[in-house]
Length: 561
Image (cartoon, rainbow, N blue to C red; front, side, top):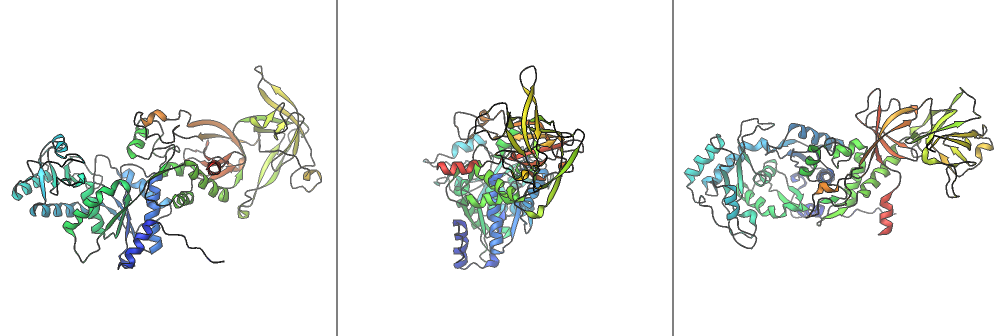
C-alpha cells in the first residue's frame, strides 16, 4: 500500500515557497516569543507546536525568546513557568533569548532614527495624542512636536533615558504618516517611561521599547527567517516591515511576518488579563488550578503532553478563527490515557456491602491485570474480604430489566472476584440504604477455571475491601464556565458565566496498591474515569484530580453533525 503524505498547512506552504525562491535550509530559524506576564495556556500550545514543529520538520533552530519589555507586569516566576511548560510539552529550544538582551541596540537604533529625522519626542498627554490619531475614515493630525529639531529630540530622548522625566510625560514616536489608512502607521510610540525595576535589568533602564519596535528588530538580530503570529497582528505587519527597513542590511536574512488564526476553546477564556482576574479574585486556586486552560493547569489535572500535541495537530493551522469544542481536547487525553494508564479500583460514593457467607476475619488476594491495552504493565494483587465498598448508584432495591447492576435477588460479578447475590439491605431512620447483605458463590472466582467461574452475569461492579481501603481526597472538576463563549457577550461580563459547581471535593476509597502513588501519576479508576495524583498529596493524605470521564462526548457531537 502506498504511503500517504500529509498535506501541508498554509504556513508550511509559505516556507516551502521561500525555499523554492532561493532560501536555503541553513537560513531557516524560527522562534516562540511569549511575554512573561502570565502562564502559557492551551492557545499558546498551537503556536508552540507550530514553531517547534517547523524546527523539527526542517531541522532548523528554534529560539525561545521572552518579550520582556513591560516590567510592570512581568516576573521571573512567569519565565520559569514558561520554560517548564515548553520542556514538558516535549520541545527543546536552540537558544534562550530575551528582548531585554537588546535594550542597548534598540536604543542605539532609535537614536539613529532621530538623527535621520524619522523619530521625535512628544510630551503631549495620551488623551491629546489619541484625539490627533483620527479615525479609520479620517486622517490624523500632526503633533505640534512633530517638527522638533534633531538636536532637541536627541537631548530629550537622553533625558528620558536618564530618568529626568515622570512616567507618562514623554514618549518617543516614529515619524511615519499621520494620513495612513493603517492607523498603526500614524506615528506609533516606540518608547515610554516606566520607573519600575525589571526582572533582569533591574533599574538600569527607565525607558522601555514598545512591542512593535521590539519584536521585528529582535527577530532581525536573531536572524529569524519566519515570524509567525496570530491574526490580531496582521495590521502590524506593515509597521513590522517599516521598522525593519530602517535597520536592514541586504547581506543578512530579513524576517518575514505571517499570521495564522487563533483557535478558541469552548467554555473557557484564554486572555491573560482575564485569567489573571480569575486568580486575583480567588475564583480559582492559582494559575495551575486544574480548571484553568493553562498548560500548568492541564498538567496538574492529568493531561499528557502527547494529548495536547495531538489536539494541536488535529485542529491544525488556519486563516480563520473558530471555536473548538473542549470535548475534542478531552477526546485526545482520553485516547492517550487509555493506552498508558494502569487500571485500579476506587469507590467515590461508598455503600457498605457485607458478604454474609464469607468467613469472618478471612482475606485473600486476587490477581488483577493492570491494563488490557499494555501487557508490559503486568499484574497486581488486590485484597478481598467479607466487607466491601461499592458505589451507591450500583445498588437498587428494585429496578427494571435494563438495570444491570445489583438489585435485591439479582446477581453481579465483582471485578476480578466472585459472583454475588443481593439478599437484603439495611436502612437508616431516614430510609436511606446504608448496607447491603449479599451471599457469594465460592467457586465463581474469576480466572479459577471452574465451571462456576465461567458463568455469565450481566453486571460487573468495581469495589474495594473496607479493611484495606485507603481514604483519598477526590477533586471532581466540571467546566469553569457555563457558557461556551463566556467572553464574547457585549452586554455581560465573562465573570457572570462562572460555574458555581466547577469543583466538588469528596472523600473516596481506593485500593491499597495506590498507597505509594507519586505526584502526577495517572490511573484509570475502573468504570469512573481517569485520575491524577495532585501535588497537594502528603504522606498522610492522597489527593486525586479527575482528569476526564470515560464517556466520549466528542463522538456524540460528531454524530450530531
